[in-house]
Length: 523
Image (cartoon, rainbow, N blue to C red; front, top):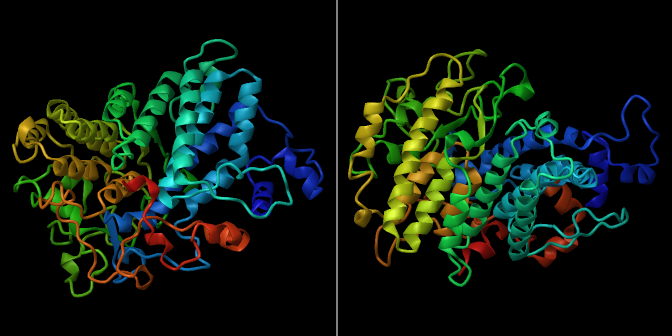
């Protein structure tokens, strides 16, 4: 595995000096052998927006955000693509290669130069890496991931419990560093390559608290470890509004400057919205109240009506004029610069973390501790903020997309079927509205939510399903043995080629490993 890392890093953005002696390569006289700490940052941040959406091609189908136009695709059936496919392994590559040694070098140089703001950002990013990677794969390699021993080829996996603890350790360090003003802390220096917050360390501090809230909220099934008050406290120290959102904005000019999920890059052209998301927005699950976001987020069929495909069924048997257009709102790939919608334009900014997401996390935590007044307040704020988010996002893209009028927002928010009294608020409403707000981008967090509620858990014993309307395909993938997916197996190209001994120890050589429930979702 380490050998593979070394080969990959030799072709990476910045070659690690520790690899040179091992590979016995000559120094390039036209390239720097050492660069200043902040020059690593921009590509690292870019991959924070890109890595998750790569894997979103697969996870989006587990969570029924999208489904393919063809029937019985592996991921639609809660399955996976067998070896030698690396589908579902991009964030693995992001963490160990694209970030990898580059992030380690940036961290070391920032510390040596006493650039505590940049060091804090580096520690937040590393925490983000481990958080998202363990939420996808379960057990991951942390302690032995970047060993300096070039002869080592087997790398031990750490438990998910260790990964969660390591995330909090890093965040505590980051929070301390981001509050420092001594040394060489310099917003201008950080801002030169900070494509997310332009050097504003106070917003990175809020991001750190937001990630802490996400980490703590995932313990909801572990009675002895879950602390709703700690979750709420972290959210309250995090984003104060949509203006604090972390995102990467695209220019739409060239391929790498275009949104990965936009139409021109052709990564989601055969994907369609599902019947599940449509049922959340057409009033089916909210007392017949039509969601004004639907026409700004979803795509119509050629006949002008809004429909969704049943996951795993494809378009077989559906008249052409009743088949939903693709995510960008077209039958195929439109001409570059054509007007699109929401997150699915070449120029759409792609979210990493949002105020809306965190308010829903607060609402869930408050609900679980029995404080329905606080839960309702956060819930209503989250829905209202997401409507504004939809409008702002649509204004970023090509053409002149329709905005949600204030009157329509008010009508929706004043409907008791959507925003009831505190006494009538349900966990299902909170989680379904969070699902809508994260639809199209928050694939990992939504999957974690669904797994925490085991996809089909009722809100109370014998009560309504938390994710009302979510159903599995009639037939699941053959290797599942009628069980849903709870993880994606580690990346084939590194692990199943180089690290079989360690994979065997965690049971990852079994064909149904992807159905093994993760530690964090168990009691």
